[in-house]
Image (cartoon, rainbow, N blue to C red; front, side, top):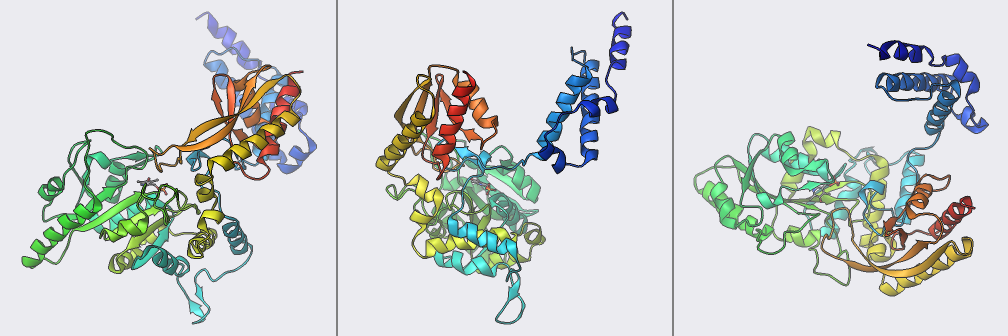
Length: 483
Ligand SMILES: *Cc1c(COP(=O)(O)O)cnc(C)c1O
């Protein structure tokens, strides 16, 4: 093989670790924030990466200088905080990739207090003995939803898994084919059901399921009728699904039959609501989504929903319903594995109190953003446009205010378009794609915006105080770098 000696030669030309270490160029602040051993490891990893690329037949610069540059990049990445704040200029309020709901100021204060010191997490001051971590949120959730009992766990996926596992493991759970949804890539109803040990019994067709489909599917081994909110999509046109109310009626009839034969177990109805909300999420469209209280009023035994979607709180899954069922869930070993930590409980309790005192629409950022009026949006877009024009050099871009229609995101309200506004930057110098790369990877807070026909759109719906300045400075930085 003719190329063999050549490859061997090139492998021998790989630089020595010591040699690269002498050349590596790092700021003092970076050098101070990582141990020497981590720098040596980064150099070794860089040499190894070069070796692998050579073996794959790639043409690589194996000089010590080039290896040192690559190793320095690794060290800088290690020294840089990974979870960082970003500016959300996408207009998508519940953007799963960038953290869904920003918390209300009251919730942030509660998190800080809980984090700083000790708390009544599992301590009852009245009895001066062990308390329950459920105590902080249960009565609030019940007061706000009309539920008999409630518990909060790590997220709604955990809630679904727990409910299925406790009540349908080794038994049948009936679900419509139109509701076997995937949410955010890693949560799929069939997979959650398989993990829980419940046997999934699919009924109906993708577009249509009737109450009689559930009736026919019920056997003596049926434990549950499951209803799943098709959060992130809707089947339009020739379609029909069975309401929770109808499922409750089907279960009631089956339970009467079972009681008549002396059987003690019953079929329960559980609804996974996805983005449940305590108040109508868009005040001017009050009938768009039933509230969780209304859903529970349909007679379901249990209902679950997320804490960080339309509720606007921290990541959590909230389960509400009949006390006998919630009591069983609290004793399930999964309850310990999926319990909330003190910071999340603090944020959730504080968020729920904002619903209790009636200030939710003003105080909870998610609700405030979803309900911003077109006039308010236009005004905010105008002030962002002015800030940008004041910062960027003359003649680089056309800056204008445009109307945009936005989505709630996070699998919520998929068919609702909310009128809004954005600032459009049309490039006279440079390119939208290059500018966005610089804004996402520059030295400042990363800015996530949208591109449309070589223009950047900065949607103002989700901007927070200070974001106008961040955007204007980042744009100015990009245009100045072209000079
Ligand atoms: C979002 C969603 C989930 C998952 O909730 P997380 O809180 O993200 O775990 C489950 N079911 C439905 C219908 C959803 O919309």
